[in-house]
Length: 344
Image 1: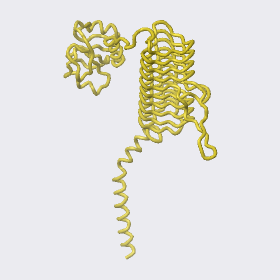
Image 2: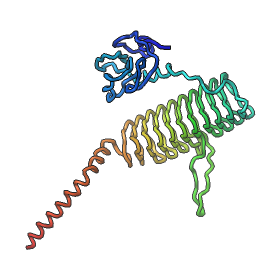
Image 3: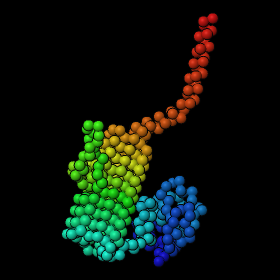
Image 4: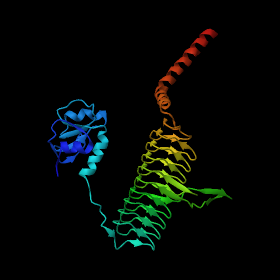
């Protein structure tokens, strides 16, 4: 049902600049929104679309310039838009209440109230599944797994034995939690597998992307702490620790026993060697190769990873390298000419 701009402003704690009686029936991007849609501008480079957008109202920051559009001024337009997206798109789960008749459930496994277990899911022995948790079709959960309340485990996820998943966790399709870590000892000309007997612990409010793999510990625990957000196709090796509210973008790989601090931001395709520490609130640029520890709060970029400003200066110098080589060649030729003249 349509809602007014006034109601939307109340939901997000915003201030209306314009017609607060306008009806909003959906949301859309600033450059392709339709009349009746609400949009947002969080990045200054999109401010140019304000005069041409068809959106009826736009979420903006408090100091955004005046416009002939109806504006809702909020401290964080992107977060406000996220909040409203949830209100406008409250999709019903695809999994019916209860346990589907084709699901296979092991002995002594217990479910909390209002669980939904999809078709052909396999859940092992002595598992504990919390209240309101949804397990989609084709999920495989091994023995002795703990899953908290309000979790969503999408289709074809695999969770191996003994792992622990907290409350409000979302795991997307194809992710593997608790696969063996990459541990081998070389002896007599061949590799011998080291038993991987630890577990994975996923704390509350974590989201894990599609086809991400998190290896079980060799001994002890691989840990992803509260509120961390992990993108698709990320590899987290055995005994790694990911700190609270850290965000890791797609195709990053973290080698064994590395400790990543709180509120770290890690770009796509970052590679990190094992047995080092990434300090709290560090930022690592996309495609960086991290060979040594990163101090708390530091921003690094490049391969090997260096201070971002230093790396940018190096990159700028590399751009000038062909011209510098030409200048050096000219100087060499000039020196030869002068030496020939002196010899005469």
